[in-house]
Image (cartoon, rainbow, N blue to C red; front, side, top):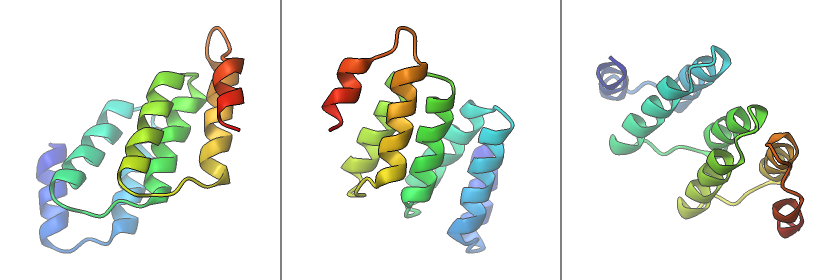
Length: 111
């Protein structure tokens, strides 16, 4: 379903803001699998995904205390050539505090 939607959206030239809205909506409805599927399909279709979309993915995992996933999205963002800003680092710090057990050592590495 997600692949069909993304393919149709790409074919009609849906702007990136609409893609971001779809990903954010999936995250807000606690459907991370759907948000990640949307992200992956858009990536394979060649859509240029910006820092806002990466931040939404990092934030969603940080809010759930999933440092490994937040860190993975952060590294994927950097690999895509997007420079991290204060919001990205704040989300990683949040994940460090919310994960169990808290990861103070990783938080120190960020700075």
